[in-house]
Length: 372
Ligand SMILES: C[S@@+](CC[C@H](N)C(=O)[O-])C[C@H]1O[C@@H](n2cnc3c(N)ncnc32)[C@H](O)[C@@H]1O
Image (tube, rainbow, N blue to C red; front, side):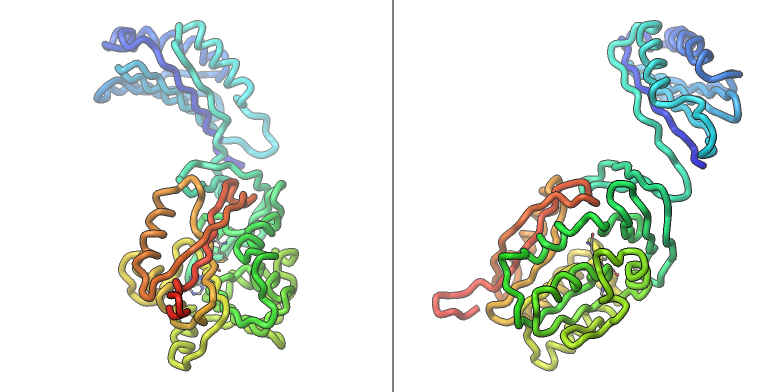
């Protein structure tokens, strides 16, 4: 079941919508055509608003049509109705386009646009890109949906991507995203054999699972949310194997707590590792008051560099390639770090993000004699 919302936009000569009479004439033309598509349509309310007018119509099975006439030359038509999955649509995208064309001719429109219906229901099909454009996914079911003490944890099924982890309504990783993990770890270019590695976050287990194939000496995965791991262990086995089930092996351990606790413990012990992976959510969870998001991310980075060997690397995911301002801001923060760091970037199209993503490899800037 869902509420279907169809949107149609028209642009007209502004002179035709400049006063109440003009708006009435255009609306009457529109109403005549709409009546052929939505049975029992009647005008329920007319409201004068600043810069134009709003007309509300009701039709068969509680359908509503909101027509907004803007005196600057725009008319928007929003059609909404309730539909059970088994029911035929009252009006679908194909018929909306026919309607659009008919209205275009009848009303002598300059330009028009009809959009595929938004399907609004109690599980999300829509997720944003990094620059806040709306993406519709072919989700046909929800396999897991729980509020943990930290976030809303969902596993949804997409016909194209397979099972997908969604945290607080943001897509995190799917069964089609090996490229995400391989670009994050720069597989084939970095040598993890015999190395000590820390993963910050990484609750889906995919990074740990792939790193273990590279024969590291030891990997500590520091993940705060038990619920994420339980959900992924059950529904994302193809990307995490049994690492979340076992939690511990001869060369790895998952520590369930805020990653900063173990990082601070390592600092106190003077422990240094070869690689650190920042595989946290875009907005990391903080259990202590930490001010701005940037401040917390910088705190994590600064602390991480204290447990990194001189020739070690901090590898992390950045942001979408369509968000150059955020990437720039992140890079500016990197240049402020002490001791100074240098960085390289890689880029890959991540299927579940439906966009190109930028990944960072950050290391100490060394002087000629090798000192940081
Ligand atoms: C699922 S992973 C993968 C990130 C992902 N690919 C993305 O799109 O952002 C992110 C994990 O970071 C964990 N996390 C966030 N803040 C944390 C913190 N302070 N300490 C440990 N884990 C944290 C979340 O619980 C989550 O499981």
